[in-house]
Each structure stands twice: as C-alpha cells, then as structure tokens.
Image (cartoon, rainbow, N blue to C red; front, top):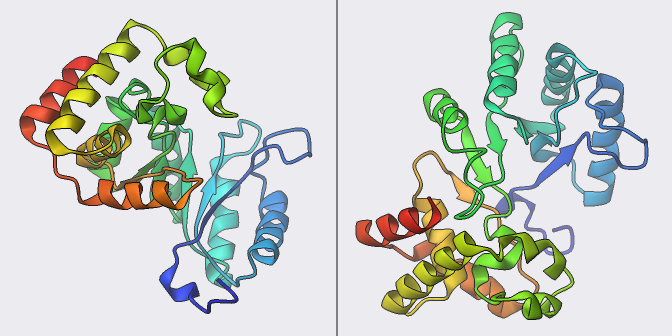
Amino acid sequence: MKSRGNRDQVVVITKVGSDMGQGKKDLSAAYIEKAIDASLKRLQTDVVDLYLSHWPDSATPYEETLGAYQKLLAKGKIRYAGASNLDAGQLRAALDVASLRGLPRYAVLEPEYNLYDRSSFDGPLHDLCVAGGIGVITYFSLAKGFLSGKYRSEDDLGKSARGDGVKAYLDARGMRILTALDAVSARHSAKQAEVALAWVMARPGVTAPIASATTLDQVDSLVRAASLKISADDMAALDKASA
C-alpha cells in the first residue's frame, strides 16, 4: 500500500485479542491500546478500517472492550469495530451493553460459514445479524479448501500443507456436497470453489466471504466468483446436499 500509494482503495481489516505470545486471549483496554499501535506500525498505515475482537474474552467485560474501541475511534486509529467467533448470546450481550452505555456497537461479525460448516451461523446468530443490520464476513468460506473439489479422499490430503485440516470433511455429507458442486459448476462452466463462494454470497444476511489465494490464477477465480449468479434451483440443490 505504501509503495503503490493506494491506501484509499484498500479496506484494511485486522484483529485483536488472540494469543500472540501473552499466554491468553485478551480484550482488555490496556492490551487493545498497545496492540493497535503495533498493528499500525506493521501495516505502515495510520488507520485500520475494521478492527475485530478475535475471540470472546470472558475475563474482560464488554464495557471495557467497547470503551477501548470508543477511544480508538475518537483518535482516528480505527473506523469501525467488529467481532469474530461470537455466538448469538454473546453478540446480543455486547449489543445490549453498547446501547445501554452509549458505546460503539459491533458493526460486523466474522463467523465460520460455508456449505459444510453451517450450524454455528444459521439460526439465531443469523437472525440477530439481519435484524440488527450487522455486516457478516464469513471465514473458512471454502472449508479450508475442501470446497475447491481437489480433496476427494485421504490420498489427496498431501496436495497442500493444510491438507490435514480437510480430513474431517471426507465423510458422506462432504461427498454429497461435492457431488452437488460438481453438477452446478458443470452447468455454469465454473470451478467448484467459485460456485461454493457464490452460494455463500447469495445467502441472506451475508455481506461477503473471506477466501485466500496463493496464485494469480486463484485470484482470477475469486474475482469470477463475485459475478457468478446461480439459479434458485442451483441454490436448492446445494442447500439439500449440505443440509
């Protein structure tokens, strides 16, 4: 960003609170204040567009965490605050504290969500985000690469350094999802990963999926996924396979 001078064309999102060597999850005001300055230095920018609480921290009250974000907003170090990995009860509690104390509320949630991993977001958490107008950016949107279709058996796990993390998906339901993805991708002359991301993007309440790329070809594929429109019948087939 610095060398290209394109900071105003980039949305910078990062997180705080995970164990970065301190031995615990930490959303205390003191840690947040220290962590944001370290992030800004590493990123070589003066503001983070979206700053996410990475994990729930039961040792720190929501009021303290949100109060720390209020100070960062006032100083112009962040533009919005959000959270990752909260369940419906935790998000509701954080929103209630923000409303009661006049503190900034979480504007964005980052849950794990994809065709295989649906249970933690579908239901009360989804409904709360929709009702509250909270943006949703999904992580592991390709189920750690499983939904790319390149992992069909344990023999395929060696295709990537992350292969071991895919093993749990190699069950009957996972194979059913891949079969549905194969059929829909063939109808659209698209890659399975593109269809899987298009499904996430078409889900009510989802703002955008997070997906990673290690090659330029993969970047091009992610771009194509953003413009891929799958039909109601395609959605129904994918929903049925992943139910």
